[in-house]
Length: 415
Image 1 (cartoon, one colour):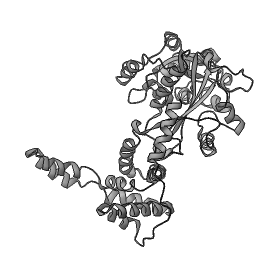
Image 2 (tube, helix red, strand yellow):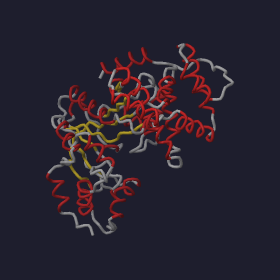
Image 3 (spheres, one colour):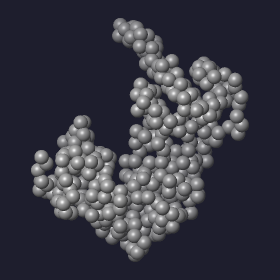
Image 4 (cartoon, one colour):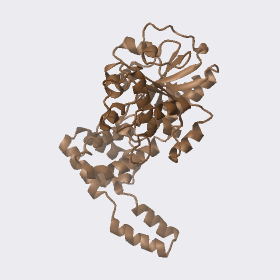
């Protein structure tokens, strides 16, 4: 992992862009400044104006932020009539000149604005936070989804996998980063610093995160890994304080037991699949004895599905819940034909195989509330990931072991 960390430090040093050290005064409204930025040609003035706009946005109250997003949504939207005219011109004469005019008109002006805003030092993190604010407004202002679509389009480009750097998080990592790991752990709560130490310090534990050079101190997403002897059948066997620490080189199984996003503003910008695959590849290189790469995953939609189907699990034992969980994961589909369960969609779409159903694997309050304690192993077979991904994308197959398929067949018929 040393090479990866060294590359990360190098990129962070070369590409880190810090915010301006002082604020620039500008008496204009934020709308006027944005329109001025779109016509600004001087690079230094453009950077200064972009930084001023982002500083001003940060100080807006909720109502003024809504007004700002309405300005982006309406005044910097597409000109449909002009696009229609240019489309006709290009259709009758597909010259480079007409293509260029049509292409430019087909992009909302707000995209150009955000590109110019992003040129300011520290702007990338500010735009991610701005998008986080926008997401909180979409339920009551669904029309703002047009602006959100454009921001996501840009973020997917800026946070392309080629720009991301994977770094290992250790007990010696900066406290500011460790605090973010504690705060953003979304699957199995980290209650204390001792809890965090038990997940990072032992020789059979690993944690990896993706970083972006423009946000070198902000983990984007992280995955926690347990190196074990065999596939675990409960989360307690992974997290218990009483477990015997294993020498990493003696482990035969890498267990991905938690993956958490750290940036709400990057929702819909997927890089978790790349993180798991890279961690698996790197671990297999560093620890040749590793033979299996599996998850220990929750089934967050199981109980809700059971209730929706009118199935009462109160008197159901572990074996019944095991079969019902298999049926849910294999047969319950969303309108797009993919698995209804969000975690299943993620891992199966990532090329994993549904390996085993684990009753009574998570007896925590959350585990009982979500899935009556049932968890699941998804297996990442590095030689089959590409094949499984293609099959899944075609809706042809949910890759699963015969044992899981048999469990689903034996599940009680849902009335």
